[in-house]
Length: 179
Ligand code: DAT
Image 1 (cartoon, helix red, strand yellow):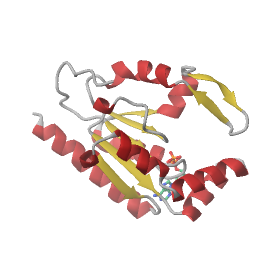
Image 2 (cartoon, helix red, strand yellow):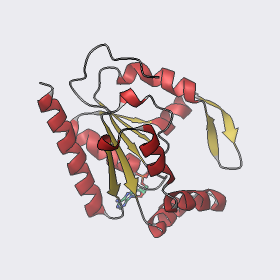
Image 3 (tube, protein in one colour):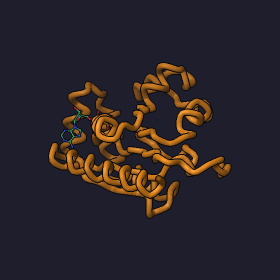
């Protein structure tokens, strides 16, 4: 929905999205440390607060209840200052976010990271295909204004550090502009 905000945020909400294994949670943690933004890993929230409709055995994942997730997060994001990470981005209200980061990684990186995580073969294949087809990037482009989308490579530690610097710079500029 496009409900207007009651007052402009003085500190931004940042969404970090991308295929599983692209580095969202690690990046979000580093951004939270560097900026003082609060981190919400939506996958953890869904489990902890049962914002799902049971377990999908085939893909080893929960059936997301998008309405419950949005209801639960609305107050948390109302005043800004939150860094959210999740592997889809099309069901959040557009007005929540000031910056949408889409992390990208090569097939070998996604494969290695998801293998390490112990994902089943079908889940690894699905995610690799999704990354090759840039599903999350297209989803971001359909859901948010192009000007707020930042597509960043996340293959190496150096790239991750660069990404954290870029996001941190955005947060600082946003805060200065709204002082
Ligand atoms: P996601 O939250 O997107 O699923 P993650 O942050 O849990 O990804 O990262 C998965 C693993 O890959 C984790 O062990 C950290 C590592 N990793 C992620 N991004 C990386 C990068 N840019 N360079 C090196 N390692 C990375």
